[in-house]
Image 1 (tube, helix red, strand yellow):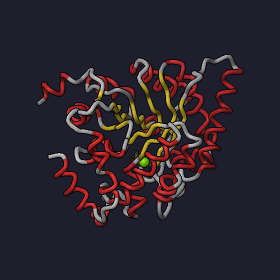
Image 2: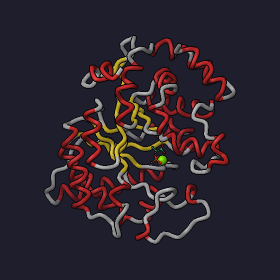
Image 3: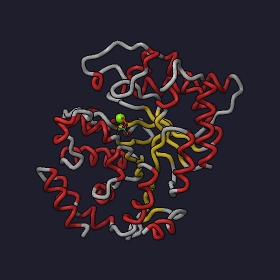
Length: 322
Ligand code: PEP
Ligand code: MG
């Protein structure tokens, strides 16, 4: 099996009926890129930048960040790299920022909410990203977007920093796509309205599932409710994909679900464009996709979306891919 995977390392990803998708990887540091390339990654679908901020006693400088982003972009040699701006809070704490303890950290002051209130933290990251954009194919992604205003505000700050850098004579790429994570139900529900303004979506199922099912992703007592195959989740994902495609935008997924062998057929049938997963899942996924018929899976879409339980969905999909 390993040999079959290895043969596909430098191949593009096609379904059995000739439909192309992109298989990308999730990374946390520039050191992860070698593993992505060794495993046949066609891009980086999620660079979690939190690690630059964690495990130290102060904020990383703009230059430190620039070096990290540039390194990832250069190593990827023009392949797409989606960098997510700082997503702290919830399960990711930064002790040196001295943020107040919250009763519900997952519903609290985190990610883009924190960045929009702390421009002194946000702007250096955006500047570092803009400066690095000259070295590859950079796409910038904002986490935990709940409203269109948040996206507009974040994008305005980004454009403001771009203008400032150009005035300073710095080189900045002219075609940086700017997109959002879809990990809050409000955003999945009005994806159509968002699709007019963003360049792309990436579905963050890790959080989307916890917020849709109201089940803390860290709490084992409610883990039975953490159901990726629940029809509510699948309908939200479908809504995001349809919305994006109606505006000619692309949709990826960077939650754990994107690499699951049972989810891949469903997501292919729904029309997902990019699957971002841990590097070691890429070659198995490419091998699996080669055997799946997208049009056949798509023809079962309405049936799956109208099911009542995750169990029914799983039973049906297991049968379908036998
Ligand atoms: C997600 O929420 O699905 C995601 C990819 O982000 P994180 O796991 O970092 O919250
Ligand atoms: Mg998330």
